[in-house]
Length: 143
Image (cartoon, rainbow, N blue to C red):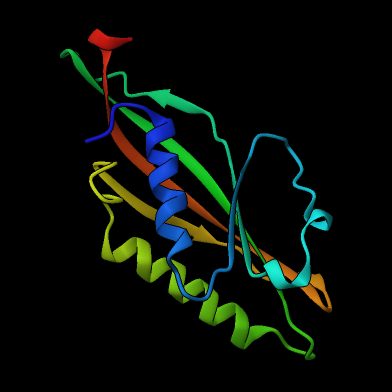
């Protein structure tokens, strides 16, 4: 079980990188992500913003539980009028991958998708977001 959020986010990025429908996975720290740096061949792209975290106040042992709320923004290209089929395929593939291993290869106690947004953007570049909640242990004796 991981004891820091960087390992958890690395495990999440690795897991998303093996989703066959996803070409690129990027972790970023800024408020806004600049998608113009990436070519069409690098899409669909999942951008993981480095999130904040909050401690679980009810834990009194040496191992506290932490919540990590992460937002994934998925960018994809669709040249037709309605991107619903591409959106549905990407969303299902990502949700299924997380659902099949909610422990993120032993990096979290559990991870679940809290919500999925509607499609945004305009032809040919569209995007949507997935909000994740991850719970993991933090060893307070090593911090």
